[in-house]
Image (cartoon, rainbow over all chains, first blue to last red; front, side, top):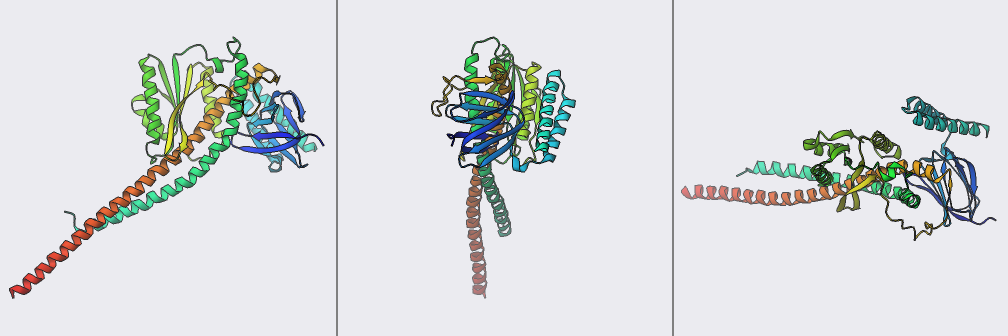
Length: 135
Length: 295
């Protein structure tokens, strides 16, 4: 059994999860990465996706997050999500809604930079939608 | 001298008022609990964010390529005051104390010859500042009708501030709100948002000290650049939550006072009423006796 470490998932509204976990998978902006106990200190931004945590007692936690960042330190790991929703509460309709919002953002973007950023979010969401469909 | 009937009416009306203030107090107490929970629940996020940022920022101290949100644009001429108040009154000195702090600040800046721009969040702050400062107010945001405030509701305020900053409409941004301490004490606070100021990192307790060599993905610079705007959103968000708790606390205290005052008033009026009734009975008796004796 892998060693456990402290994991916290917080959104601006509240602390969603604080538990001892053995393994966490995070959708980093440069690609998905997994974190185990004793990981070296690490800070990464996240793209929209699913954070999966395997807790010590073997139960699985899955949350959909929309952007934010993950902070791995020697004392544990914290995911600061701009928005986080348990996967159980999410269905294809929700993602479709998010995609629609994102495409409106692309259309509304004033500057080229903003449009680029919105487009990136849109493509990430579409990717996610396909992943959910496939599973 | 008021007649018996007048007194009776007054007592009835004060009693009705007391009932209302009592009900408002209880509503405020219930809302306070919720607001306080919300404010507390937002703290872990804000604290973590603060820690990570101060760690990051320490590495950028004095460097030329540090983001503008952190260092400012090198000027100190135009000040933006972001004044957060409540949407509703009847909460003691809550709104006016925030407005007064903002006004003092604005006066001081104006005296130094700086330009002042004001963005108010909440109707009461706008009402309080529009007299005398209306030419400075650039925007009034109302959060009316929102039952509970989510981060999404606040984000557009942050976006507005950021947009104004990038368009160089102001150089320094200060946030005004009331820090919740307890039901009887809310402290009006001014906090500088842009350029960002960080408290000295006190990570000693949680062990994630700044000495640890962090790896950054994508890079330090990019992370700092995405975090700083987000931090502004979070700061405003937690200020508004604090404000919510403070408002309910202030209202609860104010309504408690009002209820007590109404109680005192009722007691006083009842005494007068009884005394007058007694006097009237005595007069009537004297009249009857005098009439009987005259026979």
